[in-house]
Image (cartoon, rainbow, N blue to C red; front, side):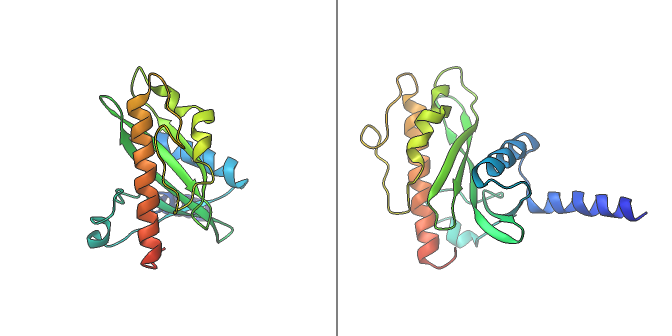
Length: 175
């Protein structure tokens, strides 16, 4: 009887903590384990009043920003969202340390036949170390990719908007 209760409690906790689709959740968990070198973690949604999020350049709805907890300590933050590609959208992840410096970015699901080079580790590596005070400029400090122009510009804009949004939330002492 106790084992059944424990399983139900754990399952309920997972549902409450994260409402990410299962295929996205699995990829996010893998990246968190690798980047933060941790085995066990919890994703705790960070939510804000709609009046605040409506004024931000990035979307903060449906569990997009999470605190990453390991052993009851905040080890960083994760942001999961979508950005437009030529005819569809792609899902991406940005992992931050506690000072909101980008530790890693990852294209989780790309749904186009062309432009998937946006997901290359080499291209995404240029986002690592970017801070709230950085501005990403396509063709300047962000490399172009032949055949993926739309996706590169979209990811660049998405990360710029995310950094601006996090900076605003931080200035308002909400993070």
